[in-house]
Image 1 (tube, rainbow, N blue to C red):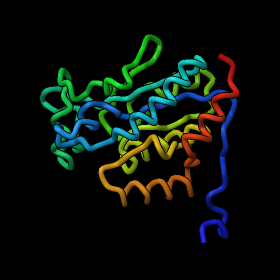
Image 2 (tube, rainbow, N blue to C red):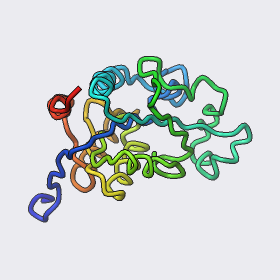
Image 3 (cartoon, rainbow, N blue to C red):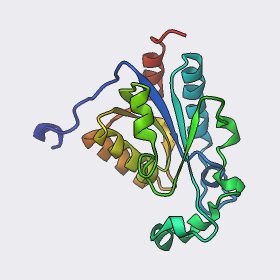
Image 4 (cartoon, one colour):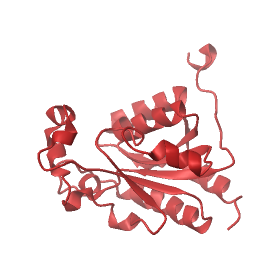
Length: 203
């Protein structure tokens, strides 16, 4: 039905990619935190891309989500999701997962809401780096990944969500949102085809 009505065309890959790793922080990848779930496979798949981006000297951006002690910066979001109170500045839950530790030259953007673009300078930074393609990884598919991918499209970027590199607490929400993103806003691509695309870049 979608295809017959002109949805779901491919946007493809461009000439200058950046990797966006959304909220693979300890609070989301450690099941000891109420916000966490088992995302080991997705983190390890993302690590493959991260190592390749570093090898090719291509831009890498991370996000974390963090709030002040009084949760003022959480606005009404914390009313909907009270567990966000675990993500306060100074907590180990807001740290990037140790398997993906950022290195010099890789920015960690701190956000308070779902999209990596909302309230941050990510769009300006990508523009300055002349990025035309955003490779999206992270969690959760139905929340921050979806919001960031939609905003990436709205900022004029060729947006590619890597299936093996995004995860969610709910399998059904994960699949529904990947389908919707692929239909309207981004290409949902495999890890293998993303790696093949990146291999063309010089070291």
